[in-house]
Image 1: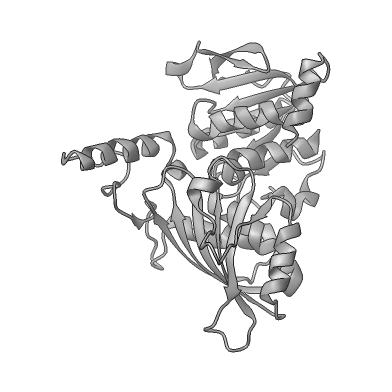
Image 2: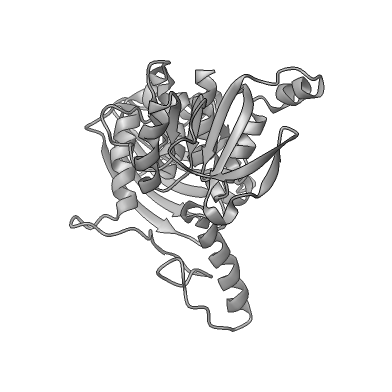
Length: 349
């Protein structure tokens, strides 16, 4: 992202841009971040179209100094659009992504609708950005956990050939959207006042509690979020046989997901080598101060573009010395969603 240079260009009255961009689901938690990331990005947006539900139609906001009016999505909404950023539910994406592509737009979809489609690249630019081409018309944004996790795993894989991943996640309310964030705030206030607060958005009380991720448990005992992470990590990294075990948990944090990871490699990767590799990895920031017990925290990763990585240490349960343990935290709304989508668009500019 090149916020400083973009701002300087606008102040100088140049770099206005020639591309037309549509953001679908613009009033949601991810959509709002897409608008902000797009405004700060190097993508040459000249015209912005913003689409939301009927109750938001007609609302106005500023984008790069210009008034933009929220519109209702229709089949003719994509005329003249170069890139369509979808921050919508899967059913909306399934209906309108083909419409956008037929109209000549490139669609970048944040839902799960196309992630496992063999014809659609599942892209994290720092990992498999070579899949971004002018010929490809649909790109899938990964699940937020997979997108954040792979930022740490990919550089280490290139160093030592990743064989197995065991992870536990600590997922914030932002992963379930603005209604879940509101529920966490409201239920916390009620709890502190000693008042009852029946959950409305999530299946269990959220204040001062944690629970298995709120997706359906499959016959294998894994919930839908865990199944997504396994499949998507394999696809993004091009490792179809990668062994992955993951437990996904919702925790009472407003924003940013955290993960405890144990990674096993074919080649031995020392703690020092891992630290050196991660320190040079794009989109990664080392936070690993053992003396001060300062490691990645959602309160610090929230609002950051970088994924924070720390607690880098040998896995003492592996006598071969081929395993590392680490802890990471990344903003689900940014690298886990909106930022990643805008970064894909930037590669197309």
